[in-house]
Length: 150
Image (cartoon, rainbow, N blue to C red; front, side, top):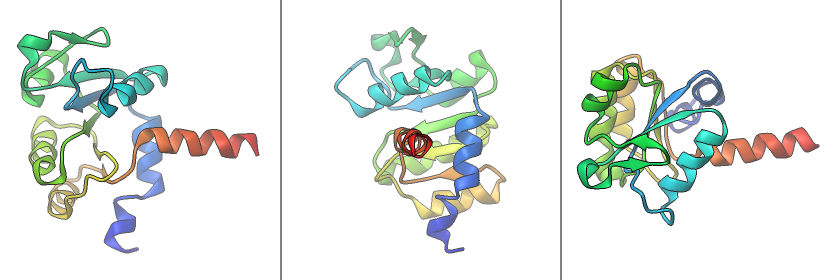
């Protein structure tokens, strides 16, 4: 299996989507026109608890009924176990959040569509934390719904 296929491993995708409850959403603000907002809403519709992570947490306060935290570490300290860290940042800025996810003991890391950092994938995988990159949970749920209709 090539490395590209490894970060799109269907078993890992299924495990993160199906067996996780608490998703920290890095880059989630209160702007309903941003992709992170609509995906966080969809995560909630699928029974996930979302934990917004944004450096302007104090100004934002709350998003989608959840308190916003400035860092993953501050969220984990207050919330407890974070199952998946979902990153809505550009590829060049995303790797630090994979490292922070490992540091807080997150169960997995998910980089959204268009976000790829092969070095971060290797570091995260080497630490034993499953990681998915360059795909959106919404795509997977849409594919599942289509195949269920067939």
